[in-house]
Length: 86
Image 1 (cartoon, helix red, strand yellow):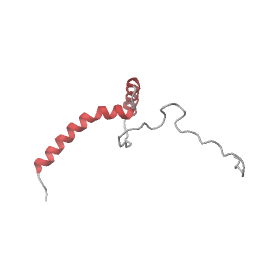
Image 2 (cartoon, helix red, strand yellow; image 1 turned 60 degrees about the vertical axis):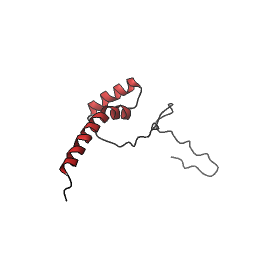
Image 3 (cartoon, helix red, strand yellow; image 1 turned 180 degrees about the vertical axis):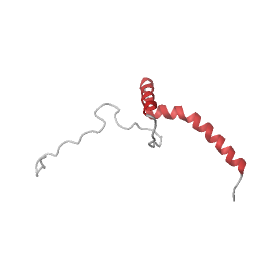
Image 4 (cartoon, helix red, strand yellow; image 1 turned 90 degrees about the vertical axis):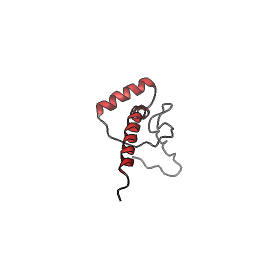
């Protein structure tokens, strides 16, 4: 590896994610986090998301939201019915 000396141009930085239009993290209002999922589920989800023209994160969020909202509402009611435990 050659170290550039004074007067030499620095090498151009590479663009991570390639030069494709729309490459990189899409702009959204979501607050994304990493989770571990079964590889087969992710592969199938990626396939469906690509067919729909959306990201895997968007597809999985849309798929999981109704189930999580339902279970969260049930858990909230159960907690409210129990009352304070002080």
